[in-house]
Structures are given as C-alpha cells and as structure tokens.
Length: 351
Image 1 (cartoon, rainbow, N blue to C red):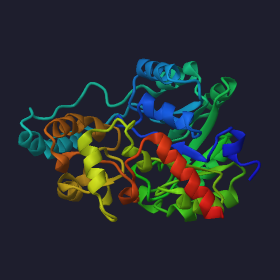
Image 2 (cartoon, rainbow, N blue to C red):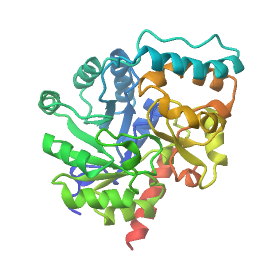
Image 3 (cartoon, rainbow, N blue to C red):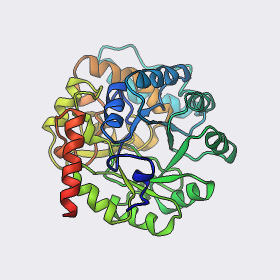
Image 4 (tube, one colour):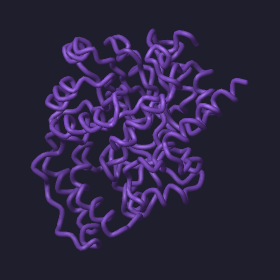
C-alpha cells in the first residue's frame, strides 16, 4: 500500500472525483474535492478551448491543490445524409411536443479535439484523462513533456493493454455500473459491460500500470472492495452529484434523491453512444430506434435543443439524467462531509 498510486500522488484518501459533463463539475466541486484530500476533475469534453482555460483559472482561483481535466478523443464526424434525415424525423415529434421548431443539423457536432488538447497542455493540470478513444504517441509525448500525468479509460482488457503499451501512467477501469457515457473504443460496447470488481481484477492482474476503479462506488466499503481486487485508487461520480457544490439542476438532484435500486438503464437515444442514466419515457419510447441513430457526437448535438428545452420546462421524462447503478445510495452532503465519511468508512472496512 505504501507505493499505491493515491499515495504517490500525495492524496489524503484514494478518491478521484469523476469528470462528469452536464455542468456537474463546477470549480467549487473540483476545488472542494482536491482541497479535501481527493483529486477533483474538470469535465472538459464539451468545452471550447477558451472555456477550458477559463475553468482552469477559476479552479485555481479557489485554491492551489492539484486537479485533473478529462477530454473525449474524437474527430469531427461526417455522417451520411440518410442517417441524418432519419434522426431528424425521429426527433421531430419530441420537438413538437415541447413547442420547438423542427430539429436541424448544427454547423458543428463537437469541439475540435486538437485545440482542446492544446488548451489542456497550456493550463497544465496535474493529470489528464481520456475516454472514447486513445491518443497517438506524439500527443502522449506532448503531455509528458508538460509534466502532466495521463489516465486512459478502459472497459475491457484490450483497451487497458493498449493504454499501457502507449505509456499511460494509469488506467481507469470503467465497470458496467458507472453512470454517464461508456468509454468503449475497442470492440462492441455491449460486449464490454463487465462488473467493476471483475474488470478491476483482470486489469490489475495483466497491466504493468496502476488501475483506478470506477463504477458503482458509493461508500468506503465499496472502495475497500475495489482496492482488495487490485485498484490503487477509486473514481466516484454519482456519489458527488447530490453535493451542494455539484452544478446539476435542482430537478436532476430531486430525481436522484427519489431514485431506487434498479432505476437506471443504458441508452443510446440521447447521444448516439451508450450511457447510463435514470430510465424515463424518452429512453423507453426511443429504444426500438436507438441503434439507427448516428454515433456520438452527432446524435448528442442533434438532441441538444431537445434536452435544453426539456430541462427548462421541467420535463424530467425527456431529460438525460445520468447516474450510476448505486444512485440510491447517493448522499446529500457538502463535499467536505462526504469525503470525511468516505475516509471513515474506508478505514473501518479494513479494521
């Protein structure tokens, strides 16, 4: 344990706050996690390069503790005309229900990854993590030259081996329980839904780099179980969503508070990539069509106006309420109190 990743990174406890998009990872949340002895993380995948610079400055203005930034490895897609037309047809009734104009194809589907990466390197976070794909050697070299540690996301052994061979400092094992988007980039997503403990053990046994556990970790006992299976740190996301410092809407927080075990499911209907969230009417009614929607980030861009309008109208049955399988155990606490409880529970699990 004396050489565990969390100790080498000088954390007070082995907690990494997951980089959750959708406004959850505010500077206040990130700063509170890092200030409390964990590692806060900015979700930078949906941010412009300038927004990444601004958010990093805002985090540092709240304190000098290390933090991380996450990006999605992706390129601007070129979807076919037929699949775009089908997607627009499928979304049109939902737009009409919300009183919106018919959906249209946006000018851009995602932020330019190369420019995002350059902004990340400029602001020099302590660590950078990546999902949806893998860096090339030149990109990894640029990060290392800037003194930035690198975490790659893996949902199966092949992805973990690829990141280790590239030279990542650690690999985050994303179990099927995790909320939000699946990071799969090798093989079929539906074949990469291993339970977190099983995936952590397999990666820890086969990779020459530290493994970080992610998926369904809600308390200190969960952390201890993951670390007994070989994890050297734990990444928690849903556990932080109900904190006061989280930036998600009150409506989303209320839905989390009312959630019961088994209330989440995987869907491709909101973004074109499988993601776990609270099951609702939109997910159920779009399920027969979800495989025909364009891949992320195309569908994610197309549904943006729908999701924004649903949130404004407080229509939870049409919102993407990302959450992991452990959502029923999420606690409404300030970050400092949650971290204190996690540490106490984790230590008690070993005693």
